[in-house]
Length: 117
Image 1 (spheres, rainbow, N blue to C red):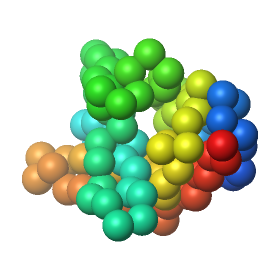
Image 2: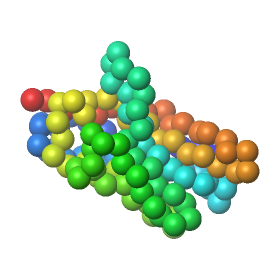
Image 3: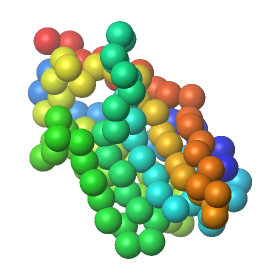
């Protein structure tokens, strides 16, 4: 599986952005897709997860009610709609998948999101 993120950029506080993660390769084997983020000097943290089967979603506490994760199975693409952005949302956002019986993890290259106050 290969992953390519897009959609990052600079936005003012209170604004919105939508990130995309396009998957290619053995996409049929993907079990779950997630967004993580890492701010300078901080550990990488889970933002949201969506399962491939049920479509069940899970969110980090800091983004609940503001971010929405979704996927388009036909396009093999995952999205992260980010609303009411805050300066503390500034980070590099990474797409992540777990696939196959060995639960192989794959990371995208990351996309920068910067929220100005």
